[in-house]
Length: 87
Length: 296
Image (cartoon, rainbow over the protein chains, first blue to last red):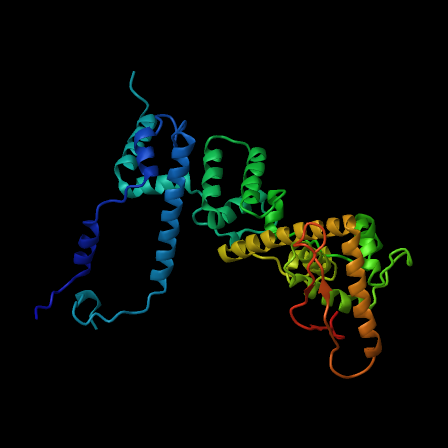
């Protein structure tokens, strides 16, 4: 059995290959940001509510994920040695 | 004339934010979910009602939060946000008069009957003839109405019997008695304002919100039945006479038991549908009725 040797850099590069998240609010900012202000104005109510609902759900997921990671129990990597964290 | 480098800086930074996914996301969160780091538990009671309302709605009613943030970004005033949020939460089943009242948890009405309070009879004169059957006379005392324990015992017994009846009118009278003798098992119906104040309020957590909506909906249904039952008794003398007869029977049965040890007496009550019922067939209580002397 081949044992792959992973480094933290490998892990980072792996995560960086994920496509960037694209939320409706980000698209609105990119496309409708005014030249003289921070936030777009004049966006239809339904579009705004949709973007807010989506981003609120996202931030809640992110918050829960952060809490879960902060309380993550150690996981022994028996088949995937990461050299930087080897004992 | 050369361009102002400070103005160029703004354009440059705006471009960087637009092109970097992480910065764009951070900017979008600041714009659309400004309270994302706040939790309702972090808010102090003295904080303004709108702040608490936004943190609460973000957790319990995300769609109302979205509507509120959209209005804030559209420049709607705080004064206009108050009725919007209150109206939406009320529409979901939790009546809310103003945002300030959200600070203390979910506000619940307290419709409980205060039989000892003379004011109660001034506010509900329609219950006086009914309670007179149980020996309660609000005219007798000026400051406190005497309510004998036996009235509670008999009231609970009659209510239990009526709630088992197939006839809707009698069940409604049963709910009226359950309200008067605080035995409906619904806190909103059974507790008066002072008693409700002694109970820690429900929080705005999702589970508590769902429970409160269920509790309020059930209470509304019970109080509608209470109202219908009282009205039916008022306009149906035959029903009132039948109720009076059964209450008398219960008191007669309880009389010899007073102060004596032994088994609870058993009484079979009969309730005949009256008015637009099922033709006047006699319906007996499906089981013998226990009259508990320790119930109060």
